[in-house]
Amino acid sequence: MAEKGQDRRKKSRGQTDRRQQNRHVWFLNATFDRIDFRQTVERISERPAGSAFKFVVTPNVDHLVRLQTEPDWVRRLYAQAWLTVCDSRILELIAAISGEKVNVTPGSDLTKYLFENVIKPDEPVTVIGANAQVIEAVTRRYGLQNVNWYEPPMGLRHNLLAVEQCADFVAKNPARFAFFCVGSPQQEMIARACLRRKDCEGTGLCVGASLDFLAGKVHRAPKWMQRNRLEWLFRLLSEPKRMWQRYLVDGPKIAFVWWKWQKARAALKRVEKLDKAGAYSGRR
Image (cartoon, rainbow, N blue to C red; front, side, top):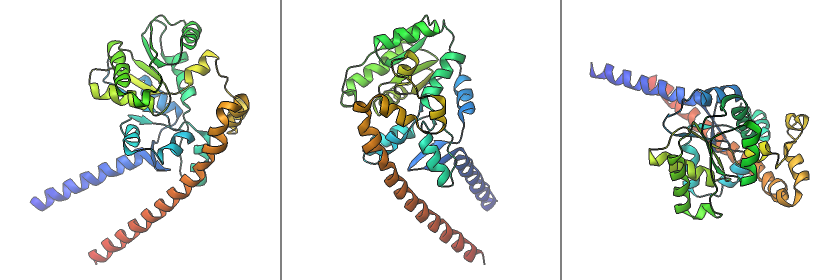
């Protein structure tokens, strides 16, 4: 009887492992949820006001390149996210070439959808980051009546007290949605601080410059450029002094990240193959 109980427990653990594997895809040393844009907005939208705090991260090429040299504590920020969705159509293409399916959910599109289709004008919205002009423009564009905005100091990454103050603002201004727009990994640091407090509510969205697009401060690429994965080129041409380092120096490093990931994936497959062969031999 004891052996049967152990067998049932092993079977249950195996089913749980398979469910977790089906839920996520491991790609370029990061874990993405296997959900598309529609499923992402549905899951976020269905969370009611007052729900325990959870947060969403939207890694792109820049994030994954930097994560290769970041300390472990930065990588763990992403591991604590409720949802991890891909912000980059370039990553989507690299995944397809690699035989993996990674759906793309751009943070800017996600933010726009929520403001246009989910957020009611009279409900509270919390924003950390951006500036007064952006907040005013977004408030006016969507007729918002209750925007709680906090502008943290510069150097947030190296100012843990300021990070905690941001989390305190979120706790004192509960909303169904809190938008963290201070860049990575600062916005993920704030999200983790909110999670640890246990008294924050709603869904935190780490979405970088998304509000800048809604406010018209920064323009999105034309749809045809977005579809053809040329949005990076549009931003480079629009802001060459600010973007040349990201797109011409740091961005191409994703090829090295891909090469290392391919090696690691091949090694893992060899180990799995040996384990299966050993298990088969043992059964015989």
